Length: 424
Image 1 (cartoon, helix red, strand yellow):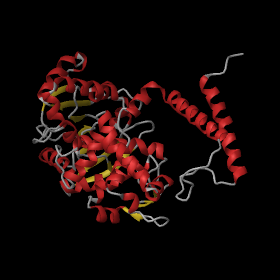
Image 2 (spheres, rainbow, N blue to C red):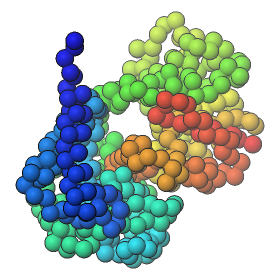
Image 3 (cartoon, rainbow, N blue to C red):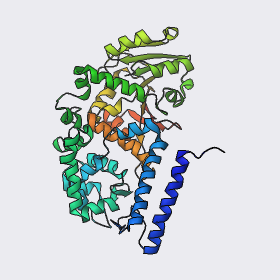
Image 4 (cartoon, rainbow, N blue to C red):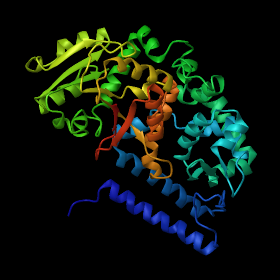
């Protein structure tokens, strides 16, 4: 008979230690742990139960790691996860939210002086770590964790010491926690060089400008992005599945900011009637041309172009952007869209392969974490954002009232959605 796997052994250990804890709660008539605001802050565990709790924690940690696997674990732990907590501590938010009734993001923004949109994003990231809970869109209440910060000032003091004194002395923790300071310094800014990245690196350059001056970091960034594109749900094949490309018939597709043309090459292999133009900055295009498959050279062409400048390819059927808009604030996304307008013919479509965030209070916290991590990463590095459907509608309208959101397409298994806009 096959020996028991390590994950099965850990599951059994978790069951054993959980049973001991559950027995203690039943016999002591204490409520079991929960995230509820009125849950106990601490338990008077006798030594044997405290030992069971420690054994349970150890088994849970190991099982989490094994279940995630090395790649997902390293990715998950490579970015700071204390953004929500630092926001709470910096603005004393634990004491601004009434027990039981809770409050709104709007009220908190008025009390803290932080713009509501940015404060909402910061706190929603913390919610995925159970710092507060959003009971309905726009309204938050305490969890036991945030109530503990409010009820035990010494706990908040301890956490603040770790955040501001001990932590920075141990290591520079990247742009994440600096981002909270950047929001305080530049609350209403939409400039890409007003983010945590600038504070973390003592520069006034944007992240990409800074990388240009530090080739080793630019190389690391490019390699990291190439690695990310291999993640399940992010491969170019999902761009092929995301839209009914065949319905276009003989058509021209402009892949704006398309790098080395991975998506265009995948589309060309599947749809022989498509002619594709890949656009990016000159250095990228020079390298892309050298690596492009020769057998597709008649249908996949490459062109140097800055997407902030007027679009040179006129009357194309589709202008496609993959993971471009989340790098830029609304101010600059409007500029990108307006640069397209002189080239658009009636009925032309703009396809944006991006996240379209689900409405709050609709996803499990683990699924929500993926969205919030990405949103906070963009705020920390570029003062930019991920967007929900209302954000996309508002962005298109701000660029031109003739641009309308036609649909949002969600492909099973894909990490990116497809925002379909149409020029009237």
